Amino acid sequence: MGSPTKISSGCGCLVVLGFLGMLALFTGRDDLPVPPNSREERPAETGSFDLGPSPTIPGLAAVDVHGNLEKRGFTTKRDFTPNLMTWTCSLDTGLTIVSVDTHGQAADAITSVMAIVADVDAARSRPLAEEILPFIATLPYEGSTPNAARNWVRENLGRNTSRVFGPVKLELISNSDSRFTLRLAPVTEQESADQEADDELQRVEAAENRQGAQKRSREKALRDEAADREKAIKTARSRLRLARQAIDNDNAGALQRRWLNEVIETLPDSDEAREAAELLQELDK
Image (cartoon, rainbow, N blue to C red; front, side, top):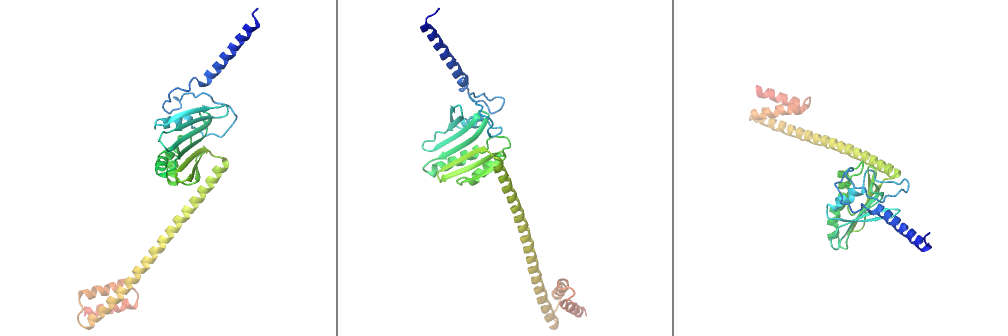
């Protein structure tokens, strides 16, 4: 029978070996290179944790974020804890802070993405924000509308505002003219309902604006038509007067005959038209 010292030493070795085995289980594949972004080729980033149901961005995986950013010169730092997995992508630009944090319960269960571009000088940070934040808005989650999301970020950069795109809420935060933040998170049912109500209101307002514009266009056309008619009447009456003078002076010819015909066409069933007809009869004598 072995001595207590040897038994204790043997048990200690087993504990150490067991610990090292568990450590290898969680970290063994973390240093694999990132493959092209496809579901079939994604490496299984270990360290996922089952914390029960939690809202996630559907169809988005961590590699969709850090894989694309690494192709653009970013470096990725991983921080996996029992409650949260975080991928922090940063870009070395000197003084400007450029960071994209991806949080999730697993590599394919992402709960949020937050991109920050900050500097004391807006002349340095804004150009980077104009390039990076619209790109982050185009991440490939299920139900995404990348063109609409990118354009929305470009149009609203520097404002504090938010909008729902499919199952994801995009939120822009700018507490100064040199700090820009974009956050992507799963949309709640209430936020989705609010966005649908806002969209419907905008559709109604747009329809009313179109109807108003059409009405104004019709009214302008009627005004222009009335103005043209009034001008034609004045011209016809003036030519009737000149034709009468020419006939009275025995100086009427083809020009006056044309004027009188124009009066009849412009003012049918009027006293001026009847007078023009009588003057034409005089010219034909």
